[in-house]
Length: 323
Image (cartoon, rainbow, N blue to C red):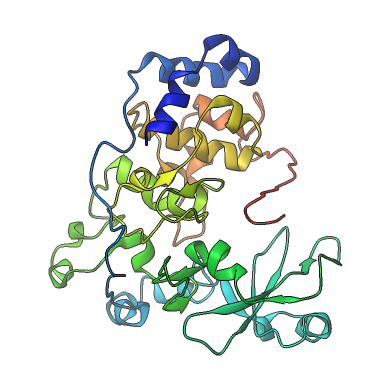
């Protein structure tokens, strides 16, 4: 990822002081003092290879039905796309998005989908609904190409970036844990992000960043999501992302802290804070991050000298996701 590294080498201390809070400076100075490394230097990826075959979540739940099963049906990754009929105001929404069968998005915007009739494709309704403002925005028309080209990589499983198709809507187990090997039934450490194993920081940031680092693009396809990413791959071999201070300063705090952690791990080789340091995905909980010792990275989102349970109001926005 030569472009990213070149931009990182252009960082200047004066610029960093201009955009960072005092406590974030401590974190930034620590990072700036560390030698920079090429984020794409390690590992491999699956660009140009067939989309791998994988075990679907129903197979996984045969063994994990007690520990994961009760919460999985409502977990946000599993329901990133969900039936429109499950929404309390489904009939009202269908009056505008006529023909819609599915919905994705939550807080800022609801977007609406319907099958095109062709394998692994959805049409996307251009108009969106704001649950908070109770109003519609955008043009009232169906687009058969936009979901496959803009959204599928982070809202569907088994995505073929060339054909712009997917194998199933929403995110299945393998999108985070990787391809299951039979031996993991006896040795849980063989699965990525398992409780028993230790996933390397670079691998973890690649997994989470493949969807949560928004604003980059695949070098091989030009699409706003990585090409045929499989957990265990090095995201940055194919995904081009600007991790400069200038770029990060344009993000909302919730997105900025993701960029900073990714940069610390991928560029500066700092492994003390990763995504799961604070986030318990299956528990849909962030309790860990209000119990851990305060670190400078905390104050990208939180206010100094305030309890970590206090969150400043922010307006979440993202060009890629059109809100």
